[in-house]
Image 1 (cartoon, helix red, strand yellow):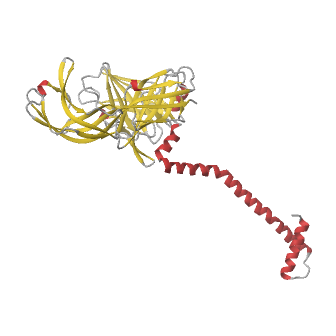
Image 2 (cartoon, rainbow, N blue to C red):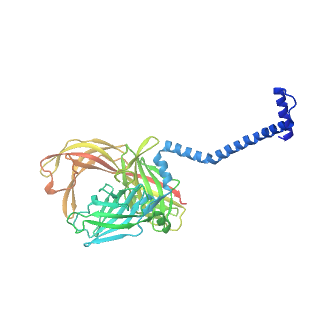
Image 3 (cartoon, helix red, strand yellow):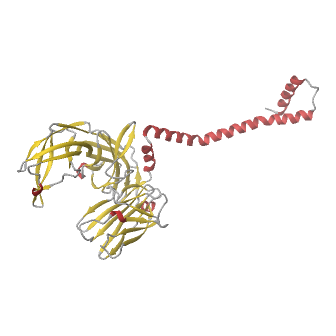
Length: 462
């Protein structure tokens, strides 16, 4: 709008309102200047608001999408997808969240009185912490006391493993391998001391202390040229059980795949894949990569054998996390296919039984027959019980085994865990320990089933 036109319109409006005498020209000019400023002020204000909404529109919709995703598919699934890009494989532990995490670059050894405590690996994260140790030439047949191993932080704070259920022990002729599980650290920790209080009277030193200096996991990723990613196609279903790939970690030394085995709560708990012959990796050329390690990795639960419970689309599932490692990839394949042919699941049940033995010994009476048990949405019928004889180290042993009707095709096998009425596990009996000429009461506490299936997940590598 021009200055002269603005002045004329303003004067006309003013006259119509008050009908004054002709105004002073300077007064009108000043009013016109003020009036002319108003559109510019309004326009600038609108432009400012437009810039504000343009700048924050993307952030607003991202937050809205995240909130809706959490509501629809659950917080753990969404946050797991976000976190997955920061996950990497640490040998001995599995695929872990590497955000602000530290590891042990080289093993550290401590020797006392002919016994060596070797710290093979350490991982310290904000959710979980693990220490892998070897005891070499440890005296006696017992393993070291896990209740008295702890980590001492630089500020003097001590964090104990407390003999927690996650601590696993593997025996071999030359050493005892122990995977110790500790709570995560809220703050990054690059140095600490592993402290073991020795069994009373076994060694002269009551405490063994091993200082450890750690490095950021990001340095490990850079040094070993690790590629971490999440496949776009990541889930397969078979026999009523889902297998989902959470993340993949690759370098020149290994190919690690982290999977979740999910089964509906009514089915039972997933306990494992069924061994090396039932899982393998394949590339588009048909080259097959066999499983090297199957790492049971605790996640959210206090016991790694106890899967966590997740809720997806209103259905409760058991979710068990495993890290499977394979040989490094040959060449640079474009596609990979994960094959799984069998999964084990278990279900807790309480089923009281009563048996009677003669002096043979032979089972001459079985209190119940044709007992239906539901597992994986299928009925398995217990038809009887047998006393099975086996030879072990040239000695004869006996154990009880429940008979069933012919199994549905989805099962490879079904086994039952038996306990006495006093709560002790019914293991193998020697001939001298057999319950001759007596009745025994027992309880079926769990049923284990091996499911046949065909889980196949194909994805394109980045």
